[in-house]
Image 1 (cartoon, rainbow, N blue to C red):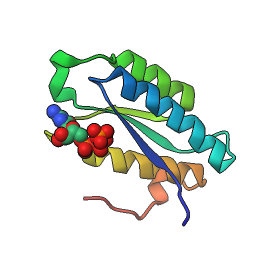
Image 2: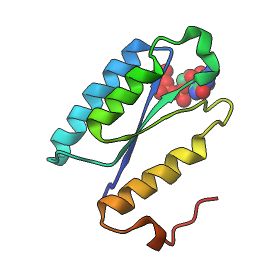
Image 3: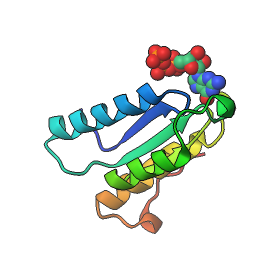
Length: 108
Ligand SMILES: Nc1nc2c(ncn2[C@@H]2O[C@H](COP(=O)(O)OP(=O)(O)OP(=O)(O)O)[C@@H](O)[C@H]2O)c(=O)[nH]1
């Protein structure tokens, strides 16, 4: 099977999940033998903002260091979930050298 991009999700309420996602990313690059892979980094569970352990800034900085897209979501409240896949597809298209406007992939 051919993989083109990845969605890596951590919980904003868990520092451990944030650390684990870094390890997963490194292993991913290692296995694929690449220096770059299209990734959307997702901080999930924004509805639990009172239990937040990972700041938005930390997530954003990590994504920047990977040249990844960064989003915070609440799967529970279905907030920005469709956006994850839309933006991943744009990132994959761009990696493949296809400009966004030429894409005929539609997500609804
Ligand atoms: N409040 C809240 N809970 C969520 C959200 N997304 C998932 N959960 C809950 O988090 C728990 C773990 O969700 P899973 O989908 O099983 O995620 P997982 O990565 O397989 O979790 P683990 O197996 O615990 O590592 C479940 O109880 C979900 O209902 C969210 O956006 N907000």
